[in-house]
Structure formats: structure tokens, C-alpha cells
Amino acid sequence: MQNDDYSLIEKQIGYEFHNRMLLQQAFTRKSYTNETHDGDNNEVLEFIGDKVLDLVIVKALSEYYGDVNARDEYECEYSEGKLTEIKKSLVGSKMLSARIDELGFTDFLIMGKGDRKINAQNDIHVKEDLFEAILGAVAIDSDWDMQSMQDAVEMMLHLDYYIQNGFSDELDCVSLIQQWQQKRTGELPDYCFETKDNYSRYRIIHCWYSNQRKRIESGDGDIVCELRIDNGEPFVGFGYSKSQARMIAAELAYDYLNRNGLLYTMSDEIDEPSPEKAINQLQELAQKGYFSMPVYEFKETHDDNGNPIWTCKCSIKDLDEFYYQTSYSKKEAKKQAAYQTLLAVLESENGGDQ
Image (cartoon, rainbow, N blue to C red; front, top):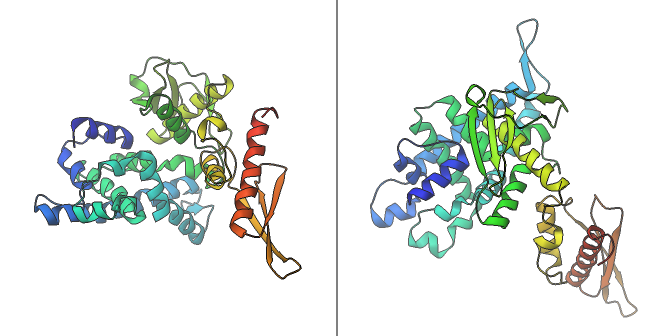
């Protein structure tokens, strides 16, 4: 790894290493050390990070959903079963793998020839292991400092966002701002953190918690996050954690871009629409928050000769309309239904002028 690589990763996870060899070890697969006999791999760090993740998530859920009541007893609004369900969603392979993809960390994996041959960096469990190994490295480097471990989990996982919004279709503005900045400049957004006591420039007038609709006046929260996009003036978020402050700053930036017509349109996000690409193009737009995931429903009938005829209905929850296409091929019916739906959403974005 180069110094710039270390700095990029540290910026993304909100932690600066004293011993960067631990960070390198977190990215080193066993296949590499088996072939080179050089250094240690990330397996034990992964084991440590798995436990760190559990601890931080349980702490966050217990603090967010419960408190000590007037009888000095801990009281929680959710049952043990519900908390377990939420925790599984937050620490599951699918979630951790998706976050590693968004962070772009697989580019830095150090792998042996065998791993490279099978493209192991694309394996969901390899990405899950990497997520946990990074947390393990933070734990060791910080001498198990709880705040450092918590900050790393919150920054890597967008923990405040998911706890406040659940797993709904609410906009994840941190991810959207990152996509906007990378598309525009090829670089990551520039987030800087300070404590309130050390921060002297106040641009923010007000912001809010998404779940409580509670206004936060300028100065509330102990952590200040300053976000600059496109080298412009900063957007400033205040929160009680780095993750929360970053989320608020990103919401302000997204709102500014949206109000000023600076966001990319759906047409900007995809290649020229075509029946062959339409299914993937709809999914890509849904993943970027433009609408909910399309739903496909099929009905089979038969012609006079007994041959199957497939009708596919493509619908999107956010839209009032849905589209049918019929074909002797189930696959073709789905492609055409997706294509008609894609054309409709692009036309609606352009005011019906497409």
C-alpha cells in the first residue's frame, strides 16, 4: 500500500492509525501469506473485529431503543427478538459486503495468485471478512478504545442512518453525495471533523433528526462535521457522533444540490435505454434511490396450439402506473416490460417531453 492509500482508507473509516502495518494486515488475505511466507494475514483480526462489531451494535441499539426508567430498571421499547432481528440485518453478510463495495475497499486487497485467479474480491464473504478485519485492526491499534471502535463502526456502516430510518427506501444522503462527487470529480467528498469547542465558523442555521423531526439549532451536538463538495463553501452538521454529524452535513448538501437543480438526472446515470439493458438499468436507478425496486409478476396462458404465452407486469411502488408485455418467451416478456417502465420513468422526469 502507498501512503495515499492509507490516508484514503483512514478518511473513510474515521480513524487514523498509529501503526499502519495493522491496517495493511487487515487487507492481507491468507492466500498471499501462504504463497510469500511474508507477514501475517487478516484472519485473527477478522475474529477480533467480529466481536467488536457485535459489541458496538448491541451498545448502540440498547442506547437508542432503551433507557433506565424511574424505577432504576432498564426499559426497552423492543423485545429481545426484535433487537436480534435488527442486529442481524445490520451485521449480516449482505450488509457488510455492500458497505465494502460502497467504500471501494476491495481495490486494496492483498491476495495470492489463487485468490486473484478466481476473483475472490467479489465474494460476499471475503468482503464481510475484510470489514471485520479492519475493525479488529482499529481495536488493536487504539488499545481497545471504545470511542475509536464505535466511530469506525458508525462511519463504515452508516449506523445512525439505519437505526433512525430502518431499512426503508429513505434516502441515504451520505451514499448519494459520495456518488455525486465521484461522478463529478472522481474523488471522495471531503469530510472534516472537530469538536464543538474547537469549531468557530457556523454556517448552518438548522437541521433535524429524520426520525424525530426535531430541530437542532446551530451548536447542538458535541461533534461538528464540515463537508465540502466540488471545492465550494462547507455544509456543517452537528451531532452526537461522527456518523450523525456526517449524515446531517450530507443531508444539507443533498438538499442544496436538489433545490438548485445540480443533482444528476436518471438519464445521466445510465447508458442509452434498451430492452437488453432495461432490467439492470431499472435496478441501478432503484439502488441509487430514485424509486423503489421494480416488482415483476408473471401470468402464463396458452395459444390455440398449446404453446405457453407469458405476460409480465412490471410495477414500481412509487409510481401510479404499471406496464404489461406479452411474449412466447418469459425472459423476453420481462425485458420488454422493464423497457416500457424505464421509458415511462425517464419521460416523467423530463416532463413528458421524451
